[in-house]
Amino acid sequence: MTRPEIAVLPVGGMGTRFLPATKSVAKELLPVVDRPLLQYAVDEARAAGISQFVLVTARGKASLADYFDVPGELVRLLEERGKARELAILAETQLPPGAVISTRQQQPLGLGHAVWCARHIVGRRPFAVLLPDEFLHDPAAPCLKQMVEAHARLGGNLVAVMEVPEDQTDRYGIVAPGATHGLVTEVKGLVEKPAPGTAPSRLAVIGRYILQPEVMDILGEGRRGAGGEIQLTDAMAELIGRQPFHALTFTGRRFDCGDKAGHVIANVAIALERPDIAPQLRAWLAANL
Ligand code: G1P
Image (cartoon, rainbow, N blue to C red):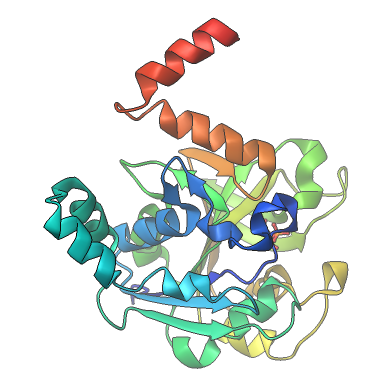
């Protein structure tokens, strides 16, 4: 089974929930402690063997492509000052030349449209999609790595899922489940943002996908779905029955960093794992909660 080697990162969103910060900072560059959300997504993809990255940006978000430049002046300054630790951080986060390709979504027509904007770069091969504002944390078994391993056995299309509360189904793509074996569930249907009480399950798609190129052909038909947008969920639903389609339950920790509270929680949770910060934070929490 062909392993995906390219990942699409839809990063064109306006980030209005994080105004005023997002007036001049792309929401994907907001840090959790000291690493941008985009870097966590890239790290997760690299751990899964992805070597090519497609950024689907938008007007006003050129800083996302700039992020991957080699900061020459900064490197020289750090070298002069003997700052080995900082230089190591830069080296460890640097991608090889040509690994990042950027294209633009010219109009905000939905997630499916954003993915379709990458079709010429992806070509006719399986590809991954990662939504960076879904911060999935499991250093021992990163989500996309688990998916690539499962995909090597299952083939076809694979989405990562987690159970969400019944009253939150209208925030997610929801799976209509078939048979379950361990963490793998057969996908019988997919519905974008069903109203609570009408959802086929509580298994929500959490922003990680391995897809076959045929989904691009369906997206190209441009049909509008929930919210008047071209939905990735609807295009994926059309593949069910034509190609294998499974969901893999993620057992690590998920932080919804598209949400202010989720982003703050992620910062606290990750800071508590950091030996350089945790003692001070723990002491402050103990004294103030
Ligand atoms: C998108 C997808 C949805 C998925 C969600 C995960 O929705 O359309 O199917 O469950 O991401 O975060 P959005 O959050 O962009 O509205």
